[in-house]
Length: 159
Image (cartoon, rainbow, N blue to C red; front, side, top):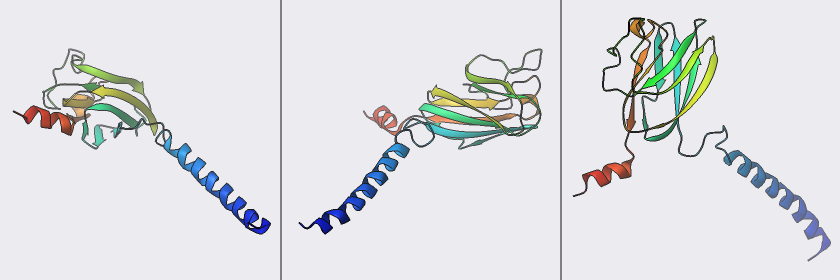
């Protein structure tokens, strides 16, 4: 091999190593710190609504990215319940009954303040609400479903 051939390969090799290093670094943590297999759920809180996308996730780890778009303090509360989203039992202080709670973010103000909440969720029905007194009664609620993993459904239906 001539010296000229080796000189041409060196820049190519360095470029290839650089590309591979960048690729591995960006894949290491999913690019945003999310673990592989974690469901990402966007939640928007406002006066007086809760929007969730997607409205369902597979069982396991779910990370809720909750943004308060208003200047009013809101909180994010996740109970597991079979009650319809607008019909949760209410206490005397106009807060939803907190039995079945699997996670929450305490009051935080916007606008555009974002908090994250990671939860390990089992299959079932959940309601995402703001539990500041009276807020869920004014419409701050959304249904959320956690579905069994596909392989679990297959086992359950096997004879």
